[in-house]
Length: 94
Image (cartoon, rainbow, N blue to C red; front, side, top):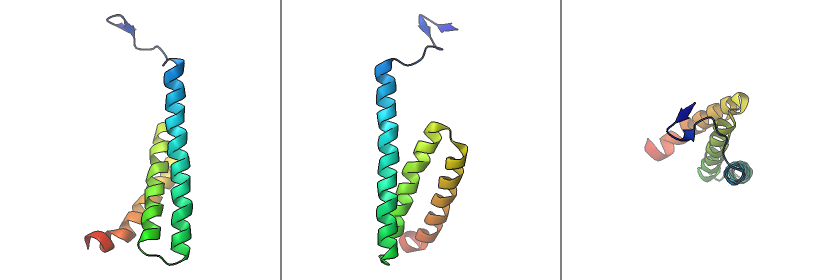
C-alpha cells in the first residue's frame, strides 16, 4: 500500500535500525545499572534513595519491554513500578 510516493510497508533503512537498536540497548543497560544501584542502596537502608533508583530502573526496563513488545517483561516491570511507586508515594506526596 502506498501513500503518495511512500510505501508505508517499507522497512526502516539499515542506519535507522542500527540507531533504534542502540537506543534500545542503552535503555536496557541503563535500567539494569539503575536496578543494581537501587538494590545496593536499599540493602544499606538508604531510604528513599534506594527504592527511588529502583523505580527509575524499572521504568527504563518498562519502556524497553514495550519497545520489544515483550509481554512478560511488560507485566513484570509494570507491576514492579506500580508497587514501587505506591511505596514511595507517601514519602514524596503524602
